[in-house]
Length: 581
Image (tube, rainbow, N blue to C red; front, side):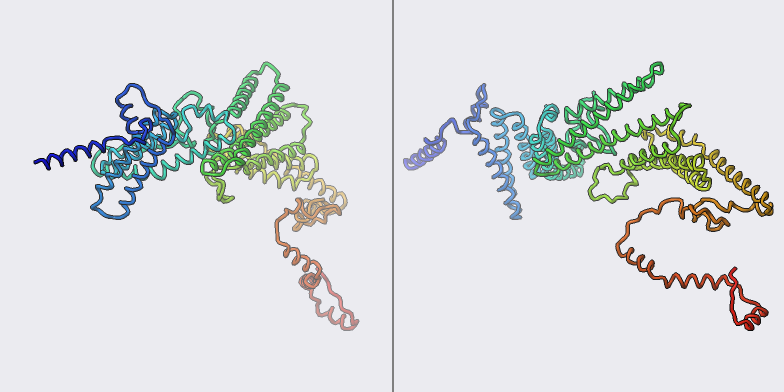
């Protein structure tokens, strides 16, 4: 009996010794004691050193890694050990969150909340409590997306931050978005699948906004926070750029108000506002280029950084598009006002030069950057509405340029055949332009005005005038031939014998042409070719053998065979002649 009592007292003494603290362990650094005091006391105890939080984080990671190691051993009997390790990791993560709330800032607390939710979700997933695991995974994903934004006041910070802060923010966004999409989302979907199979209600999957941040919650000023260019949303996250675009918007509104007011003559004022708008767009372009250059220099790369660089490239394309569009609209407005004046000095030749400049501006819009331009073929623009609108505008300008060129040939050069060919080509381009403009969406600027302009283009009357001039010219020449004694019937059917039409237009006519008549009406079109092409062409040019053979064949083909009487005479005289038809 005494021995049993001694054993019991020894057990109690050893258990009491286990509860006693070591002499070298200070109570101020005991995290468990601090937790107990925080729960029981009225005031929170601040963690004395950052290593305490690191110790809790490493302990949670160690327990989670130990659980994964046990799972990889593929021993089904040790599932309880996995649950035990995951539960311990969850407890360490909860303790880390509790300590962080008393000693860290809001961003660190939110990170610890996401980490604690992730550890809790792993534990409930192994426990097969899929509904609770789904909620924890969803909470962790939501917190990661919020952390990728940089805080609630990130909008104000983004406008004043420099290039280094921008690079750090984008790298932080890469970290949390990648964590949410590659680690948490597959586990969340698996839990939702198991919940659905069990017949329980599922929950909505957290999503990230299309602009790389959370979707905006404020409804006022949404049109000033983002701009859509080529079906891509450009976010206004820079204060200086926003101010410049607001200035441009107010200037455009003022110009529209002046155009509606027909009582005042605002020609000089509109010119000043046009130059001011171009200056604002130039300043915005310089600002975007400096932002892009600064980010490219300080950044080490990453998906978010590359997306931001691509967004800067699209911003440059949008600003360049606005500038080019304003120049084209202003030029066409001046051209239309010049046409309305009765004493206008601009002839068809000057209009051809103006439309040629507008055509170059329109073609430059096709070279603007587009979303996902890397790896896209040059002709893959079937689904790009912006490219289709630009192509329609190019066809319209080509039709107007060709029409004025034909009218120049008719009215000033009096070359009626080229004028008629240009008018017919302009008619074809006009029809194609009308079809392309009508096929574009309603958001094409000035679409109705363009269609009305093409419909009012006097192509039929112009071609009728050219044909009438050609007929009068033929009759005048026939009258001259009749006065000279030629047959009137044949003279009416003949073309002028000495016209200055190009040789390619006189191949099948009885028209000798003037000595100054060109060979072709247009210059040869330059085509890219390899040097071997010129070598072959040079060999054919210096080798007269083939040419002489062709000449001899042409002479033999058009030589009249001699009759029998002529052959006898040739035999008597000994001379041979040939008659060429």
